[in-house]
Image 1 (tube, rainbow, N blue to C red):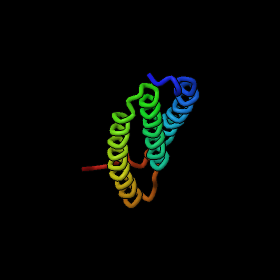
Image 2 (image 1 turned 120 degrees about the vertical axis):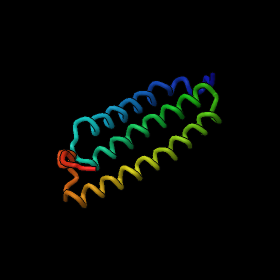
Image 3 (image 1 turned 90 degrees about the vertical axis):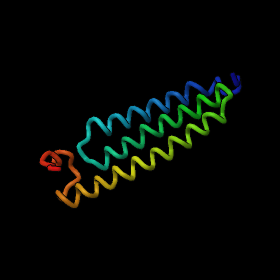
Image 4 (image 1 turned 60 degrees about the vertical axis):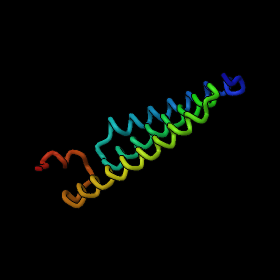
Length: 106
């Protein structure tokens, strides 16, 4: 365990918890599809912060760097596909409201 990072663990963990909570708020209480995408981004950023913090505290930075890079690549793919769906929904319905997506047929 890397003792130099132990005093900084709690502030970073609290910051990650706040970012995670705000991301959950955006996802659960919003009907706007753009805000939902922003909430997903906030959730993944909180997880990324916790992974970096865990790597710094445990001294296993190489493994955590590999995990963070993998997470970023997956995040970009997911957000790109989701943004494409949002753009398609906007073109179809003229709105980015999630309630407008109830009459989808496929």
